[in-house]
Length: 260
Image (cartoon, rainbow, N blue to C red):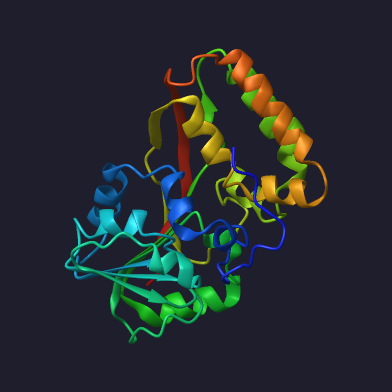
């Protein structure tokens, strides 16, 4: 497991951990959203001309939206994330914040913030969404929750997340765990079907993913790297064949509504 080093420099991403590990590394070890999610979001829109991905990271959601819309503009405040973004037809990547996109008024049919809304300034973000929204535009704040691992290491992974490392997450993380239910959402909200991210990962996939957690960096910088090292040792004992794959799922939640 790669533990982030002290002194690595943030690139200004809303998530302070992302820039420090590098956009490309972050992209390799993060779960991808199912195409069905983008398909459902597109179906809620009055038009499919222009979708906006806010806090886009390396473009996982943007690539899916490009299959449903004529064009997609994807924004992230981290230049490193934009540099590492996966090129996709009909997707334009820009370095900008969700609160100040620079888009023309009334041009977005769909705005999506995937695993990013808890970093935004709510008042400025809502004002920007109203400004860029086309008639009957849709806003979706999407988040995936705590991963659920199957297999012999499931209990140890659950204990690691909730008991060992949980206190080291940034305060905004609580919004992710609550599916953004406690975020202010002053729009015409409607229900979203149940979606999940499903993967079959080997042991290295899991430890590489854990290495991207901001909680891991925080614990390490506080001199508590032993928390992660102990977990890794226990995981190796419970999962001795590193190449063996186990199912892992992330429940998808969030808030979806019509801006105007």
